[in-house]
Image 1 (tube, helix red, strand yellow):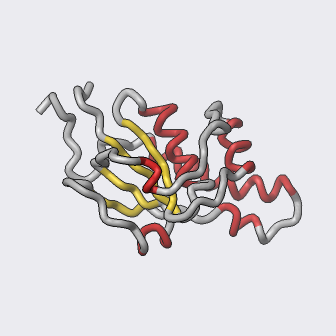
Image 2: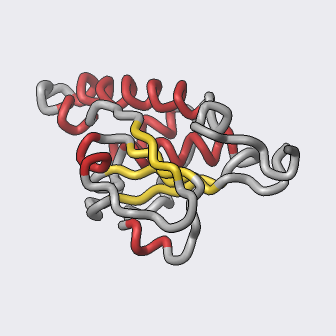
Length: 152
């Protein structure tokens, strides 16, 4: 097990859905191997459908808050994972040896606009949730240049 876990920030446009799901899964599945955070370029509030579909997987993100990067203070991130195109294109600079990688996921609220039925809308969120879960399960080992600090 790593002595010093990497700090990983999941960054999205509004920190309402995809980045929140990523942080939730990372804390739920990988807290022994990494410190997970999420933020947005902007603050859009926590998406209730994201909360609902995460609860279906036993992951409670209902107490999460939507925040911008600046609210995370002096945390030095080892990795920033942008989970949407806009965040990737407008990603701020981070100090230190922070590595920024992009792993894009479709936008559930945008996908859900095609449907009127609540269940069909939720299916959009579930699809992206499941894709994010698969990605999180590969962390931190698949992050570029990752080695377990303290065990080199």
